[in-house]
Image (cartoon, rainbow, N blue to C red; front, top):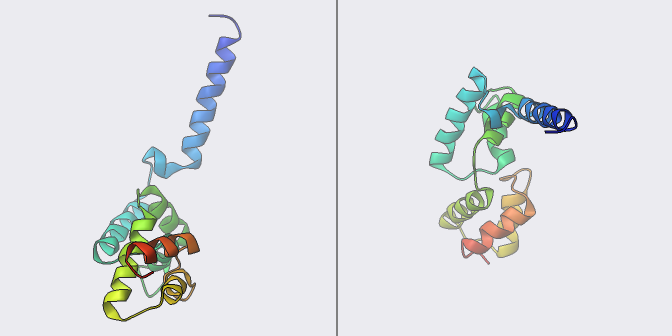
Length: 132
């Protein structure tokens, strides 16, 4: 091992520590409120489809769970959620309630007043729910 190896290894350790400190959810270092938000998020997801923004809003709003937005965001981002599949679930739920045009369904799924999916996620959901 040359003298240049020690600083490089030290740099790798510092970068790894910095990476995990900046993303506590990846390191498994969630706080109590963040763990509770994860539990609530799992309950919501067991009932219906949610977009990332919609789930964070549900967890943090006064009409929802009232978690701090930062705790809700960290909790949601710590979970392995397929947002495209959530969009499919939401699209199917809408189509079970009433008829939508493809464009109307995508708009409902992606609207900030609706489900808050990205347009790409909403399009994926609408197409894979046979709405287009």
